Structures are given as C-alpha cells and as structure tokens.
Length: 433
Image (cartoon, rainbow, N blue to C red; front, side, top):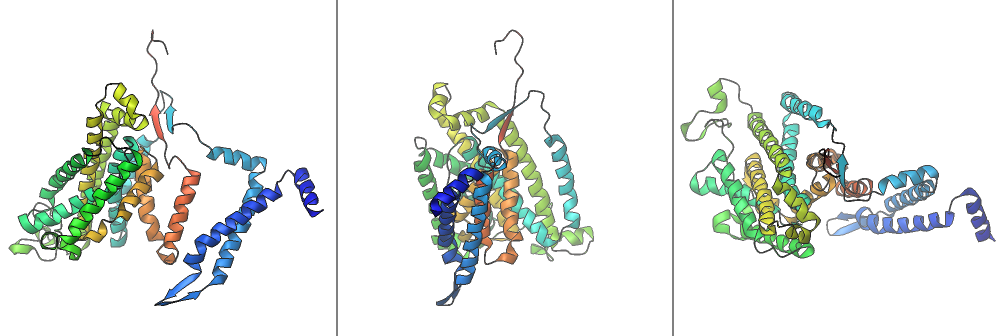
C-alpha cells in the first residue's frame, strides 16, 4: 500500500522518489567508504582512535545533499542545467572570422599587475608566485606532449630533474653558474626527450604511459643511488643567480662585491627572490609567445593531426617520427628550464622532489586547464599551486579537499577550464565552401 502511495505521489508530482532514494543510498555508501578510513580513524603513534560521529555527520550530509540534488535535477530548471554539462564534440570551438579576443586587453593588464606585484608582496607571497610560475613552465611543456600531440607522458618529471641536477652538478664539478647552465639544461633535457622519443615511436596509449613512467623512475633511482656523483638522498647545493656577477647574499664568495654593497642599498634577503621572479616571468612570457607561434605553424598543426588520428596523419604525408620527436624535444626543454629555476629558488636539490606525484600533478594541470589550451594551463597551474597554500588551515583535510576540487572540476568542466578555440577563415571569392 505504501509503495503504491509513493508511486502515485511521484507520478502526480513529477518526481521519481524511488530513484532519488536509491541514488541517496549509493551516495551514502560511497561516502562511508571514502570518509570512513580518512576521517573516522585518528592515528596516535602505534594506536588509533575511532571517530564515528564525524563520519556519521559527513555521510548524513552527503545523503541529504544527494537527495535534494536528485529531486532538483528532475525539475525543468535542473534538466536545463544538466544539459549544460553534457558537451559533445571534439572540444575545439570555432570562432567567427571577425572575432576579437578579450585577451588583447587582459594580457597587458596582467603584465602591469605582475610588474606592480613585487612592490606590495612579502616573501611568502613572492615564493608562492615563483612556484606557480615554475609549474606554468612545466604545464606548458607537458601541454605540447599530451595536449597537442596526444602522447601520454607519465615520466615528465625526469626532464624536470635533469634541469635541476644540471645546475647542481654543473656548479659542483665544473664551476658553472645559473646563467651558464640555463641554456645548457634546456639542451640536455631536449636531448633526453629525443632519446626517450626514439624507443616509443610505435607505442600508443597505456603502453606509452608505462614506458615513460619507467623512464621517470629510472632517472629518480639513478639520482638516489649514485652517492658518489649526485649525493644520493642527501642531495646537493645549487647556486643562487647573479646579476652581472653580483651575488645576492650578505657576503659574496671569493672576495667579490655583493649586490647591496655595489648599489649602496641595505641588505634584503628578498632581492634574490625578486630577481628570480623577474627573470622567470620574462622566460614564461617568451615560452608563451613561442608556443603561441608554434601552434599556428605547420608543426603545431602536425601535432594536432597526430593527436586526432595518427593513421590519417601519416596518410597525409606527415613524417610521424619527426612530429613525435619534436613534441618530446620541445616539451622536455621547457621542463629543463623549469628545473634550473626550481634548483636556484630552493638552493638545494634531492631526489624526493622528483617523484611520480610531481608528474601526476603536472598532468592534472594540463587536464584541468584544457587539453591544448595555453590560457587554461596557466590558470590551472596557479590554482593547483595556490589552492594547497590557501587550505593550510585545514591541514587534516587538505588533500581530501584538493581531491574533491578536482572531481568537481571534471564534472563541471570535462573539457578543462578553457576549451581550445580556433578563429574561422572567410572563404575566398570563387572558392567553393
């Protein structure tokens, strides 16, 4: 009798209450599985304390929220909202031929903000922004390999490590400084990308991901176990940058003159980070411009053709060997640059900074920003860098909230923050459309 009443009520009101209840129970079960081990168990040394109350509140909140959401999605407004999330197509949006991008106003404004930012920023904010710019470089490099060429690379952190250890080893054994190693690290990382590219020319998808993952782990294990050369787990010191030979420390080495004494200003430890920020910002702008130009050149179109269909790409006469190697080489060189800045920013490098988690984080930047989207990668790099810092007050749940944020992003923007867009072309007179 109660089932019949429920069915009649749902048919008259337009709500499928039975389906909503099933979805609510499934959501509660999943929440119990996820939150139970993470929130319900508090470790205390070798023992633990159960916290069932916290789990009950979280599961109850999820179930209530899911029930309300299920009923809302059955309304006309909810159905229109749900249709907005169902985006088909290839994700490439074609704009009108006369479309004028708003970036022509946004980019100069952002450059002005970047120039003014160091005046008002403290050391903490400056270091966070420097880290964000480093991840922008990493995201732009991997975006060439994964986003444009469609080659899934899970060992991208290896090229990052080559750049960082290139500075540390060059300083330790050859006496090279920041400016000498910066172009050399990009070249070494590019050579490593080319060497990796040759064995994987015939591999696709999961097989390519496994091989690149193995390459990244090989580099990390070599750095970790070659004690006499790399210092192993103890790491190595990395030199600070110099300004025309002037060091930013309180006292210069080998009897030189420090930066503050040469210019007659008071010593400030932030001078080093201000200089790194300025140089890194210029390098990021240069990489953005080069990538923007490459995507509109034949090599950029070849990357996208390879991503969409390799067989069709080869049938069109494109040399898939050169296309793949160019993507690996350019992406790796960008990671090498980022590694040099990371090493000089920290002043120290060790293998624990180049684990698989870093590769996963950089891949998340590319996916969340939008596969092939330059603007999306820049935004996602700062979001995924700044978000953990903003969530420091929630230290117990920071990783959990970080994961929830990524899941919501994939639901809200399955194509990433910014979809790839292309400006349409007006057909010439006398040419059939």
